[in-house]
Amino acid sequence: MFGTSAAANADETRQFRGEGYSSMGLAYDWAYGQALGRARDAGFTDCEVIDSYTWPGGYEAWVLLECSR
Image (cartoon, rainbow, N blue to C red; front, top):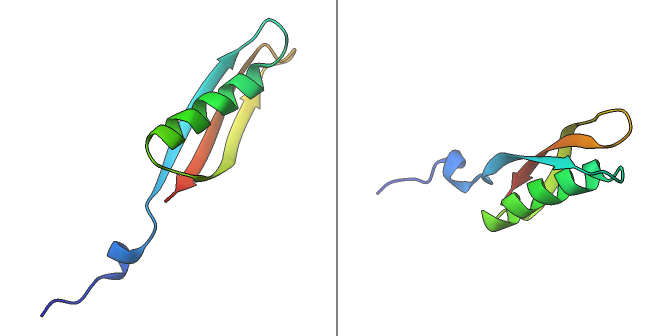
């Protein structure tokens, strides 16, 4: 009989990156939405922002989410 390893029971964790561009200064929102959409499409629901950057003016940004399921 085989035992179950701890790794098999652990949550799967993955990172998702989103990029956003906006002429109205909403780039972060677009980047976050893109990353979250990619995570949800892959079946990940528990996410948190682990890194992000918004260029001055808010016209360009990227967001990195770490998600688990």
